Image (tube, rainbow, N blue to C red; front, side, top):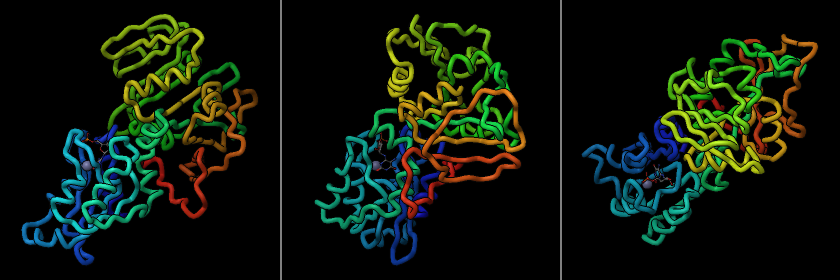
Length: 354
Ligand code: AOF
Ligand code: ZN
């Protein structure tokens, strides 16, 4: 199953909004096939795994065990059901990492296999299999994107100067890491004040891969179109109460004046199939997510060498303790998760590797 997870991760950046999945076929302690879901819309892990078996090993398939990090599918989507493929290949035993909550599968794959006489073992490295696809799972089960809060703070807990001036807090290494994080999420969000004061691009320039879809809350359309956010270099969605307009790379989503900005933007993200959002500030927006309990991870960069006398205080995560803390150059990175895992399962994959 560890190998399945390793294979699955090779699909990072190419399979979203589908989950990352890896599969391994084993005959008497020897791997005779392995595969992973490589491309959105392409063959599933099980198909690539069975296809990889060498001609001389083909007779061993009906004597082997298939390990797969996610329940084999039971539905006709862009590809035919993997459970049928397993049954057709007469594989007698399947070990599943975790159940697929996608409504068209959701236990039906396991049931189909069992009804056909296949022995199925579930829940092996379940937490790790779940964590790998935490964005997909949250999107399917909670009907909202996976929410990652991110901020950088001084040693005395400030995220900006008191006039809201832009303050360079993180170092070259943590800046690069933030760009990697941007490459890993479907969307990125800032509030009106941050857009105005920092004029951020919110793109990924210091890492390989994609840039996220930019989202900005600008209820009364106060932001000047000269801001970098409006340069149309990357798809950008402006949540506002004044106009609806669909452009190629710039869309205005109108919400009712009485609507809650955060709940509206999450609904818009679901409509756009955006499975995750990196929230980059400012304090008021981050704190609203925390106060509503609408967050999954917080990644806090602290520069212990920088103290400012008057500044804007960073958000407060009262009763939470970091599940992981590491030194990056002189900065400290602390990761918090809203759902605290029991101590036995703190093998949380570092967020930088998805
Ligand atoms: C598997 N193995 O490797 C993956 C699965 O549109 P489709 O046909 O690609 O189906 C997408 C759904 O299939 C996806 O939402 C998830 O429930 C499941 N993904 N299942 O058996 C795989 N990637
Ligand atoms: Zn499948």
